[in-house]
Length: 235
View (cartoon, rainbow, N blue to C red):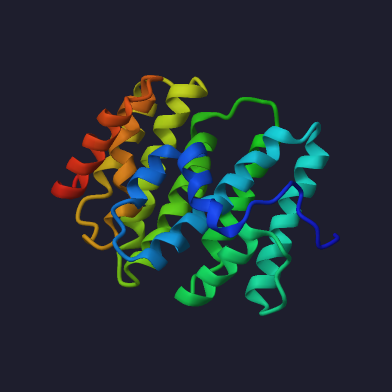
């Protein structure tokens, strides 16, 4: 693969603005990260997830989608093998976040692997959908929690990210029924006791039940829900 971005790139300073536009729930959670450097590192992780999410959507066929995902896997190779990282702002920002916080590769790799499931046009069964939620939203929340609090319970963080992803699946991909409801409730309950420092990694999960109904809360409504979640430590 050549060292070229699969798309037109953004200046590094625009990653936060991009996050606000394409991922408003998690951008809102990130506003409760007081440290500006940590907030920028979290934006890099979410920008990475956004790039992976786009791969199956913008590719005209599954092979091109695989190529795009392989490009990002090669970025991880460069990052974790301490090689020069290709000149893409998300790749560069991700590399700095990984090195600053000694982040593990496994959840970042899982985020890539999960997107291969989307290259198959066949609808996911419930078990597949829950695995997808764990390896997308859950894995991202796990990485973010590690940035915010190296001693955080990563399983609790993963549960919160998974809950948010399940809610979005229920609202947009036809994941319905009592088993899906039960999975969402279990994931939300699994966040209980996450440290205050790490809580912004999952605060957006408080919007999961609204998302599950196919609704998007107003900006003010979302802000109030996330603020209440942060104040109470509950989603």
